[in-house]
Length: 328
Image 1 (cartoon, rainbow, N blue to C red):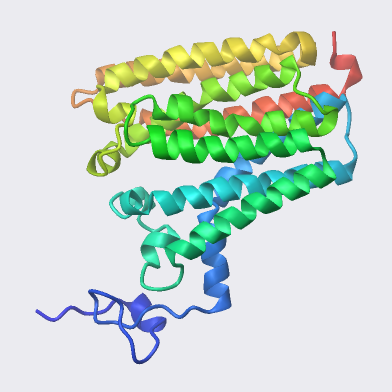
Image 2: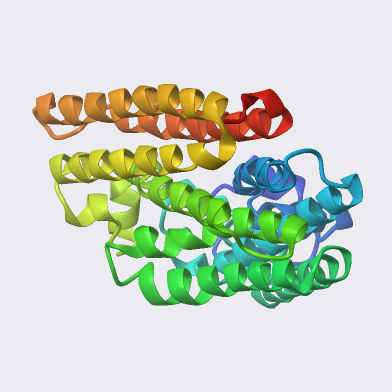
């Protein structure tokens, strides 16, 4: 039976060549298409969440508003660093991205016919990392630049290459890479790393497993097909839900440990948000236990709630930092 090319391949086809396996010409390599693909490789939606934690941390370190020039340099440098790590991750994981439904539309998979070549993605990732290092080093300080570089290297070598395909603890340990923005932000303002920054690091570190395991429960079949041993692949839903609850309690405890530095307004808000999150984690555990087939819609509810929770928690950090009368 003759294979009929899809509408997209016909729309972007260039005469005289073909996409392997389809009989259709490959996509045109126009600057707009290439630019869009390069941006997509950086995973902008993930970067947004990382930056949500950076500005409040800088406000807390300053106990006010740092110089706008410094804030912008730190945000842009952090964006470049995160984009570098994410791009190189896409380069290294392009084989399993092609297998998983959730990632099957990433640029190196969708555009394997010619829009972005693997070596171009790797060069782009390295260039972003170099730009982040120079911008943070010259516009903030070299400690902030070094911490951003450490985050890139940790994400690539510890998470992507060492743990992701080998250990169910991949996201627990490897998730530490996503905690570095608070250290970068604090160091950019103060030139050092103090204990409040380490507490914020711990908050994100403990937040990551409940956040990501909830998502992985939804896409368990994807990870299993790609032979990635995420916890939901190798453990029962009940075990995953129980561990999500444990990490949730530890996370809330870490948020309250920041109260002596941040003030009573933050303490009240952190406690209220913690009760909210723990209630949802308990609800997930109960619904998983009640689901006869071991499945439930609750994991994605917790996943989305976790994003709102982290955003609101760091908003509380920012508000407290800007209100002197909110301190102890």
